[in-house]
Image 1 (cartoon, one colour):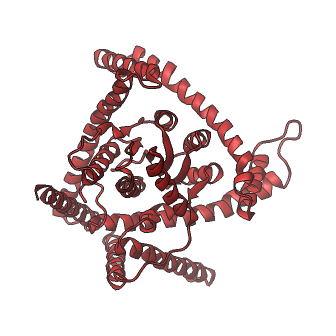
Image 2 (image 1 turned 180 degrees about the vertical axis):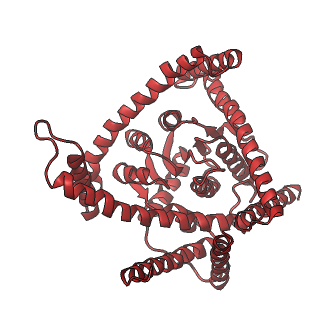
Image 3 (image 1 turned 180 degrees about the horizontal axis):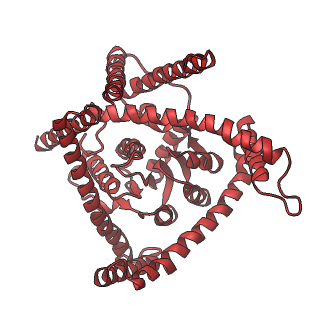
Length: 248
Length: 211
């Protein structure tokens, strides 16, 4: 048991060291990323939001902070901050919906912080960060009116969603809204692949900030993920070979 | 200056709490474990209180809609009335009372079940449109695989299970290819979770406000 803890700590320490080292080495060079057209289309849609005076909607899913799904919601909150910085000066400030109360409070805090940075002194509408519903379908039902009635022209679904996300992608299509969707949930990823015009699969959800103006640590974390993935592949293949040879 | 100090303080508290919880998970030193349990308990209590704040937020959003006579205000009015009625009944009779349970069973469950039915239609429609949206090899493979699994899972009238498709193709697709792919995706998600956790510990990402 002690060895398992030590091994886990060693992995975290190794990852942290790699991230810090790579971000320091690459602090002056421009990051090079694999082409993901979805992010280019998101930037265009955000530009249109500001030009048209319409609204950006970010939906953060149902992942609670005290659950393993909280990481997806945190990735969504990071993107909310970046996009709010770009659109808070628009005629209609962005709106965020979530299915977890703590994430709803954090979304209000994020939107308020961005709003006050861009328009100091102006009154912030705290209902821009909303709790849509606490169960999967009540969350979807609570989010649909925002997409239909609040002059939304771009929607970002980023967090932990289940298959109910298909109701939201359908609403986006009906209202002719741009939609980028990402979830850490596997069935939801399959549903989003089939129903969303732009869907992020697997760890692409966690790469969103690096692609959208993140710092050196964000781009370093993508490289570290690649390194760790190759190490895991090597370990899996070595384990299979050893088992085949009768050593395990 | 005050704003900046507030941001620095919240960042320092968040990083210190995160590091202590992380160390408490990896090392079974009693002092660290006790601190971890205490911090996690605080988080659970705060999350429970956040539900109350969330309900107030929900009430504010829909109350504003009714007051400003916005589109869909009738539904918001129904929501506000239902919220108060359920709250008063729940407080007066307790949630386990048959009347409160019946209210949940006869309203919440049928509504969620009907949304599930709508979802089935939405997914069927989405799969039909898939090739229009993604006319490429992966899109074709996705659709053909979904069709093969559906045919393999749903027995035909009078024929029953389809030979080969039900016994060989479907199990191979679901238990070999799909499981392999799912594990690959889960490993990617786990690595992403690890790096985002570290970015928060380093203070590069601050989901608790401040710049």
